[in-house]
Amino acid sequence: MNNPIPYGRQNITEEDIQTVVETLKSDYLTQGPRIAEFEEAFANYVGSNYAVAVSNGTAALHLCAMALNVQEGDKVITTPITFAASANCVRYCGGEIVFLDINPETYLLDIKKVRELLEASPNGTYKGIIPVDFSGRAVDLEAFRKLADEYDLWIIEDSCHAPGGFFNDSKNQKQFCGNGNFADLAIYSFHPVKHIASGEGGMITTNDEKLYEKLLQLRTHGIVKDENKYKNTPAFASGLSDTQFSILDSQDYPEWYMEMQDLGYNYRLTDFQAALGTSQLKRADEGIEKRRALAAKYQEAFENKDFIKGQSGVIEGHAYHLYILEVENRLGLYNYLREHKIFAQIHYIPCHLMPYYRDLGWQEGDLPLAEQYYKNCISLPMFPTLNEAEQEFVIEKINSFYEDQ
Ligand SMILES: *Cc1c(COP(=O)(O)O)cnc(C)c1O
Image 1 (cartoon, protein in one colour):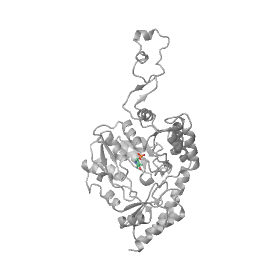
Image 2: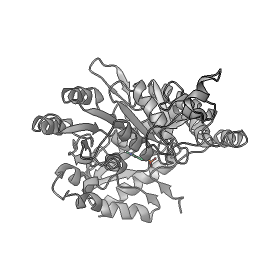
Image 3: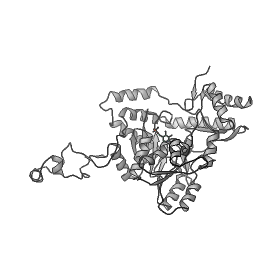
Image 4: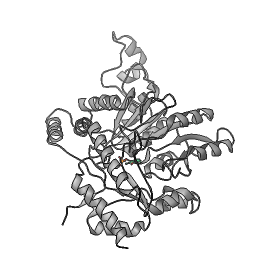
């Protein structure tokens, strides 16, 4: 029998292990020099000015919502075909999530639906949009930015599926996901099924210096350690009365002093996770090339098959976190593949029909295209170390399932 084939899997090399071991022997376990190194390398990779490493992708989303000041009752738009965290971050801050339907060709949030909603609502009803580069396909953020600016909305790009992905803008320039040219903030996850693994881990990228500084502060309890920004007096900080303090030569804040100025969290990444992330990042381009080759092979294998209703296809700039088929008898295929130890997955159960969101009033029929997509979708094994024989085995089993019917 064959080895089990999952839909996604990390690849840890000897070099990755060495880097982590070296970091464990260094002076730093939590935030140390490897964090800044990872942030710089990652910002470089996506083409943004700033990057902030955090403990996971969900924490990244939460900090973004906080940095953008999401408040009780604020309405934010996102897609139902995503991991729930894309929506939940707004709920953490007391905001309201408005799901809009997908474009059935791209599986991404349909900008036409967003425009229709904004046009039909009084100005100021919505605060922001969270488009998701679902499956690794880059959202056209130039178009989203233009729309968002008309209505004064912010954009958080959930780019968890698309480090290294890009779209071509109206001047035919490549615009990499998370490069900060259009979205206010973009977020990534380094969960093992994603392109770059650090165990748990996340990253926020931006070109906005103010947001960047806010994020650094919120990542560590809202603590500020910069005497130009302190709100309490140097006398108070020193533990002296104003008169005692005024006769001292030094008027400075003592070295130990710091201030908690906002309600932040501990969302730090550890130094050894950052070391693993940096090491993995070196192979990111290679990984995407491999994913694109796998996608091309799937596309060719299935393009003329009767049982196929749709598939991810070959799309320029696609980062192929997932390769999706829309098929007849999806449940049958899923179970048949499992019998052969091929662990395909379903991405995603529409968020708005999770019981939590149903309790908030969402129901079946609200977003018919997303619901239709869910009935047929299946994500095939897609990861750089999937070898030729394994991919052929997957293709052969899918074909034989439908031939035998
Ligand atoms: C994985 C993922 C997240 C959450 O990341 P974690 O690191 O698991 O918290 C958010 N959004 C999308 C689209 C994801 O795929």
